[in-house]
Length: 316
Image (cartoon, rainbow, N blue to C red; front, top):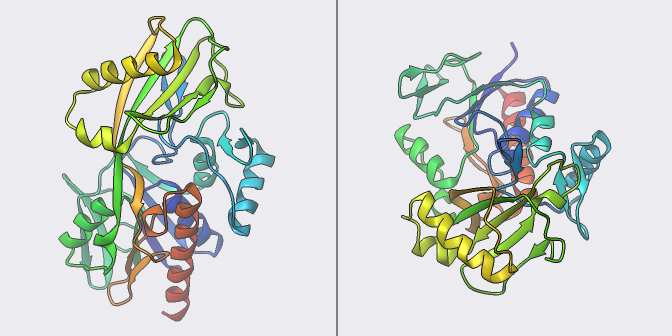
C-alpha cells in the first residue's frame, strides 16, 4: 500500500519535499493558506503590474541546488540577474510553479489543527477537516511553515520538536511602486548601509519582466520594521516613500503604490539542524529557519526532510 504524506505549507521547502517524495513513489497532498504556491518566493500581480515583493533573488552554492537552478534555467523558470544571482522568470513564483507541477494541492485553506487518530494524521481548518485527498489517513505529516506558526500547530497536537523554539525571524515592510516614466539614471539595485531601508530594486529590469511602467520594490530594514510593526499599510507606504525619494531622487508621484508586511521575512537565528522530526508521532518540520536566511536553505531543508520520511516509509 502506497504511503500518503500530508505537507502543510507550499513554499520552497514544502514543494521540494513534496516533489522528492512523489518522485520516490509516495503520494503527497499539500495544504497552503494562500491562493498560490511559493511562500516568500512570491509575485504580487495587480492592474497589469507585477512585483517580487518577497525574496528578491537567489544564489546556488551546493551541488543539489545548482542542479535544480540549472533545470529551472533550461526550462525558462529562472534566469541570471546580476553576478551569480538568479530570479524566477517571468516572476519569482515561476520556480515554485515548476515544482508544484503535478502535485495535489489544496490552496486558500489555513490549517489550524492537526489530529492524530489510530496512527494516521488529519488536517483541519477553522471549519473542521479539510476536504482533500488522503486527509485523515496520512502516514506522516510535514509542517513546512515559519517556525512560530509550526510551533503553534505542533503544540496543539501535543507534539514537541526540540530546537523549534530557537528559530528567530526578522520582519519586513515591503513597498511596491510603479511609475509612468523611466528613471534610468538611478541604479537598478541600491543597498543602503544603514537607516530605514535595506534594499531597493527596479523590478522591471529583471529578466523576463514585461511592463509599460517602471516598477520598484523597497524593503525596510529589520530594526525599522520592528519599530513600526503596528503601522497600517497606508502609514508604512507613506513613511517608506519619503525615504525612497531621499535615496533615489525620484520625486514623481507613483502611478501605483502599496505596502505589505512580512512578519517572518528573514531568518536571524536558525534552529541548527536540516529538519526536525518526531519518529514516534511520524511528524516533522522543515524550512529555511532550520538552516539559515537563504532560498537555498529552504530547498536543502525540504530535501533532507523528504529523505527522512522516505527512510521511515521504507522501514514501515
